[in-house]
Length: 287
Image (cartoon, rainbow, N blue to C red):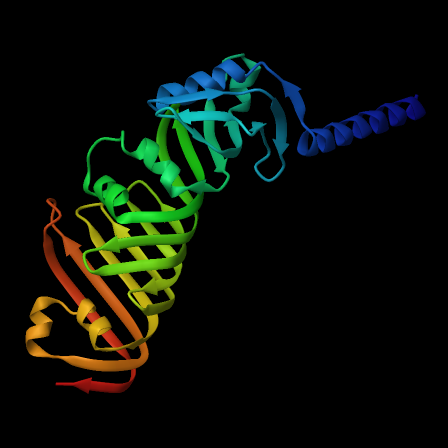
């Protein structure tokens, strides 16, 4: 009897370990959740059309929960194709047992996307200053994203977006930013860009970060480390009209560290700003 119980226990243990390994690595393929996930995402994200083929149920040992995953889903947003690597959806385990699945969170991971392609669907989004800037002032680049959606009662409660941008080019008034790259993170009321690198009108940005917060009104803070070697015409393009009245720069070179804090009111009118720059300038000639 003892041998039989020991054999039964070992058999159950082997089955449990084998099942765990199978669910954490390969996963169980099913089409049971296709319509459910397609409908929930489409209902929560307007103008999103999604078609899922292969869905697998897998086990996340870190979170000790099951999730469904699908590679290379067919996604269209405002009629434009979006290249995705995968979608993972975490479902409440108890809701699965009673056959009333509830999504707890969804993770969407993209492939590289051309910014010009992104403009095809951004132009349909409701008007805003950020939309206008994106369409008119951002010229080129590639980006990817990881989008996390938190659900409550199968409705989106919160979100967080992060990713990487490279080969970025933009223009604003007399300023041109090119060869840019940075890591970004966007939440419901705040966001940041880190590891900023690029060329801003012949000023080489070696590192830096920019953060923003919209909890009460828009506030932007940041720090940029840069170096430059500018002649008179290049320096003139960077100076504002008021500064040009006071100083005339023939040329300069050196390294500059800039810290700034900019505040806007609810109408995006400049309310207050602080700017501090320190560095080591060489060959600075001022008339």
